[in-house]
Length: 410
Image 1 (cartoon, helix red, strand yellow):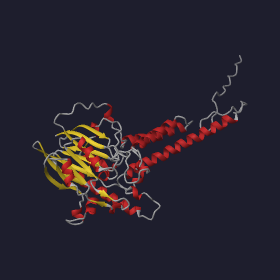
Image 2 (cartoon, helix red, strand yellow; image 1 turned 90 degrees about the horizontal axis):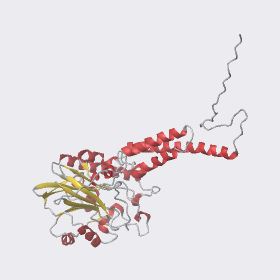
Image 3 (cartoon, helix red, strand yellow; image 1 turned 60 degrees about the vertical axis):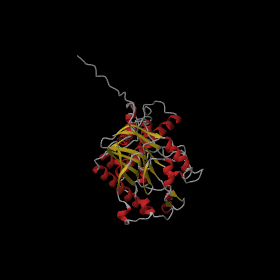
């Protein structure tokens, strides 16, 4: 009895090239047209480009996070707004969907890793705004305003600034850059304002504390003032000149008496890491020495603030211009000893800088235009201070910063 030979099985797999694209059947299928070959080549190089871009961005994101606030040149990596740190890997993740073959999952994985890193290390997004109901503000809540006044409204009018401040009818004002400045003289161009009489007319019955550029105006009696951080009294002696005070006095603590309790107010303006008039990297200016000095000052200011807050047993409110974004690690230490007030803000993406203002660069300068991609202004509490409402308010072109307004109870 004879048996039939087993059937010969033929492969039905479609040949592919190294990138996963189908190739013509070698047994004689029709050759692809020139247009298809070009399209296939473009998709191949597109996928490679997306993978390369995602890898470059991931390396940047990791290095930026590792050196942020730890290295004096980290500013060149930290200058990217937190929104871009999230948006760029998100765009790359979307772009990865159009890649072909093996490059698609690789690009998606690398982009997704960079996106996850950005979301975990300071995206600038106020997630509680999605679900938090602010609720009513207690009738006895204090109103606190904080504002970088942009050299006391030098480019507009101090009367407009005072009118804006008075319109808020705040119990406490924490004001920065209460100072005069002569453009073109850099760090040597600052001079004190002799305007106590004007301030007392604008805020009758209020109590005033000032040091360098920092001005605190309180409806409540001032019961104490304490040095915070590396003040010039330690570095230069008991009678430093105004330039030294301006350069190093960046935190002023003022204690006020509120309904039988003592509230500690920290008025903050951390040293700017790089002034815009020193941006020309091609000049013979010693940028390394400059950035190293600025970085050391910032580190000392943050350390002094963190140490004082940690040891303070009073209810505490800290507010001002920190010259730091959510993505910069400079704020890490302060967050360990105080509570960020941001969850009380109703904005999903709270931004405080850079809004249109004449500034000091001339009316048509780029830096005077609306470029609102950053948040530099922050508020923190400790010791039972409760924030019921936290808003950023416009300043009508008086300052490139928005005004912080908080409603708090002790």
